[in-house]
Image 1 (tube, rainbow, N blue to C red):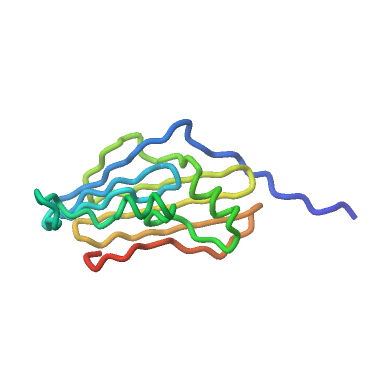
Image 2 (image 1 turned 135 degrees about the horizontal axis):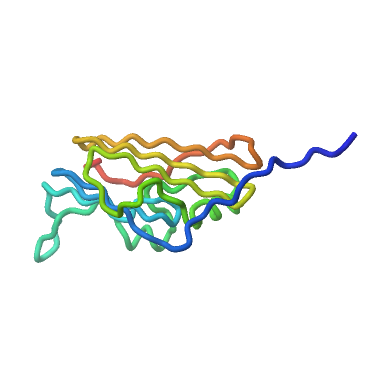
Length: 153
């Protein structure tokens, strides 16, 4: 009997890091294609406590940078696979870098073994639907998405 071989999976990666901005009258969300994570989520109707005040951003960029825990990063049981997924340059379905909600953003990445896809649906409210799929050699993996501590979302 021949040994089992891994399914042939196409490598899928973007050539450079870029940001995709989705906004409506309530928010402005910046998604990085590196890891397909949210780097900024500004709530246009709220101000922060800074002097001078600025529009409230519910993503704490300094803390996320230090921990590597950006909102919507993939959480896997295997740290090495998790780091690969969250560091990959995802291909974005839309060539536009700025979208007006309601809008859909689909992102996909693969290194030939690990495949990750994320789909975000932004509507005219604060509600965002996020769907993910993670496979290793064609087999689905248990996975989750990292969130953040913010009472506004």
